[in-house]
Length: 78
Length: 408
Image (cartoon, rainbow over all chains, first blue to last red; front, side):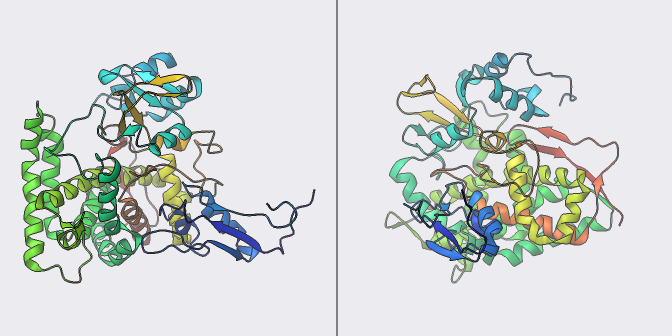
């Protein structure tokens, strides 16, 4: 079992169909997540420098709708 | 109010459940410890025999499930006991289905983060002024002097009513809470008791219209110019929505502020954390909202539904304790600990589903601004020695009095 090295780019997926505009991601990790005027996150799928992992996870874990996930790349992706 | 310790909760979890009510004297000081006991030692769905009988969903996942199934769990009765406080349904919290969806569309844009940020300078100014009044004294009764004032000031700002109406608004609201509602025997009595505040809001809409709405982002200016179902709103609808917003916003935010500052006053290391980096404030606010339950609301079942082997029948009432779900160990590690760096913070303090709190962005702004501006002026403070914060569970879990002191 290998874990991805920290040098990998971090992939983040925001499911716009699930987001309900709580804006919690932006509240707890404004450096990673942007929300629109109504509080909705429209960022879709994007990549982030792995240095931002802590903030990205903090914002994702605050989402009451569980709209933010971290798709794995590589052989287990599916 | 009875002294703490005079009323002890029942010994058995069965009796805890069957006698559970936010009005129970033995739950006023601390409902959280008995709730945790009840949740951990009972089936997920229990029944209280109080207030005509109702179901209690004790788990986060079931509260979320009910909130996300509004066709089964209707908001037609949002209190236990429920009383129709207006002659028409309350907009939008008492509505279901398409009618609710349309009102949410009309109203949600009035409270979104961009609007709240637009009012940030005015909210910050009102906050600074309230705190400046007490800084030199070296002590204050935080609830009356700060926690009651700030949500009301913010309400007046965001609705375009004007801060000069603070005292009339608070006087009306206090009278309604302490005399109007408690003395009302019938629905007609409640409607009569609501009349002064109803007229206060109607006059405010009239003034707003006379003074002009052009380019303004306040709620009344936008309600005067927006459409609902392709028609302008009636005066009664605007007043209804404002009245409901006030009932939903003021006591709850006062309660949350009081509970947050009690925690801060008892934890100087958290005060230092705020002073060291105000960037920590949003996470501190969210964790304290998770840890300190404030509000609960009711639903009424529209058709028979089974969950965990329990059949809830059409017409049954269900209590959703939003804040208590923040203590569920299935969702939060060490749920009773305050940890500003915890992994999961997805609390339901503002509810979830189509009825989640319309004012949540405003409430967060009030709390964050209060904590930021307070610590900029009063970096270190504590409970006055010998003072005892008096808690209450009803109508929103909070504190009646909180004596703070500091070196001025």
